[in-house]
Length: 117
Length: 340
Image (cartoon, rainbow over all chains, first blue to last red; front, top):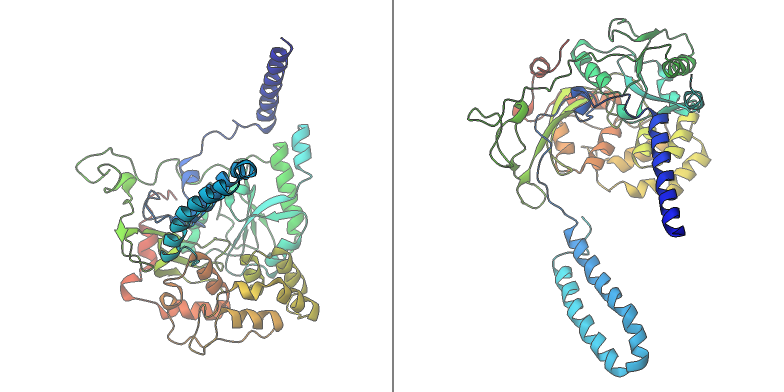
């Protein structure tokens, strides 16, 4: 019961705080953005094409590298605990896992992951 | 005045400066005043300060800029010979203390004594929406067509790795903080790589410290302010601080090379070591296209800000590819959304 009262109290307090902030800032006074305000800020100029466009996510190779290393670390923490009990067997298993992941890293290397563009 | 408005009057005044022709020489030093915050976007400002004269061809640009300010807003014309440039603007002579004019205007805005300025342009889209249909108003699916009268970005050659993706074309300037004042360029971008450049309006003939601009672009505003405070006087401490900051190493070598072999690094060194005598680069026959095409946005901004006004005006006069050059009047006539 005490927990429920605390939750309701915190919820009420956050609603009050948000309402007070909105009232103080006059959040609705300015109203919705007008057509000139919706244009992109180009220093007084106008765009000639729509901004809706496709462009290359050039950091995707970096994300591949990140995922490879992150997966390593994710499994190595619990493995460190098991290693104490299992010994060499756990070491061999982790070695195999790292070899498979390093194939991904080698592939990335060939693709130019480490070249900053 | 409510307590929160009174509290807001204690904060620095957020000002966006639109620098015109013959802007007062003190304009650059406004950045040093603690009572003001010079912001980079009209969306973060309460006051538009127009310094100097705006040529007739660029008045529509100023009106567009004015209407992008959030309410409550005000504008101040400083040393302007065009009192009807902005209908509700406060006119300030060069002799007055502009900082106190700006502070009083902000306080009046907050207290309600100065009413917020209405829009100059109509509150309507640039082109009318006429639904998807057979007349090219809106395309099928994601691509194609001209919704709101503007074409969708379509695929074009990419000079970086040949992967064809959408090219974005827009006019940039004349009141863009990272551009030299008055410069308007039509740029075609793929991501952040510049594919095409055309000059619409050359920069104004105003004195501005390129060393300060370069330091700001390199993310060193403290050193930029220090350089601005010292003016054109070189000091050993200042040169040493800038050298230790690593700013020079942040500029790619060979960037913006001219006929005499000098690049942005060389021009930056000269601006820092001897600000009073910047070396005149050899720019005969150099087009802006030669300098900017293929560069990423931040590199292009470093190149533009490494030249003094005179050199940049001559480069703009050199033109570029004939097809890219467009007549200024034609461009302004095509801005159908402008109501004035």
